Length: 234
Image (cartoon, rainbow, N blue to C red):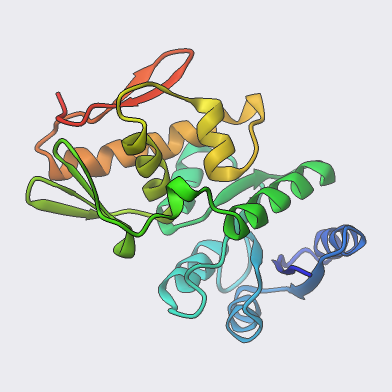
């Protein structure tokens, strides 16, 4: 039975999520502030954390950052649950290492789909994404053990999601990777209305690659289709 930690200071929402997930067969732990949430994350080591942003004293961004910096909790998937749906808010969360983002108000069935997808991702990572070998294509070298990318002689640290996306593009560098395949392989689902999630991650990934490659572009957007890796940049 998968264990899920719900961190939300709104007691009604916290209880609603808890009841529905328990009815779906999950073991659910509740926390009502950021301090309690991080403490329980370290003590209980849940399989997934559902984390609100707007909380008193310690907000969700701070909790997520602490989870990612702690060696015992850094691999736990985080689903950010918040009323803040602006692009810059998503970018901030993804930069910290949040795995997925769901904006309030939300349908409980959609939450369950996201939960199942994240749990499936950690329990059944596609073989192509689970490799621990160093991969090199053109200028790009992936360093799986440290979630980093090296271009020529400079290195950039990536979030796990960014690394998985780049890894997928590297392995399919000779062809376009459809957005639906990225969603399916990385997140485990392919809703047509969630391409914005990919765009945010690709945009952030491009920024990191350009920073260490003197402005060269390594990811090409195929409008209406997906993305293609440019191994030697342009």
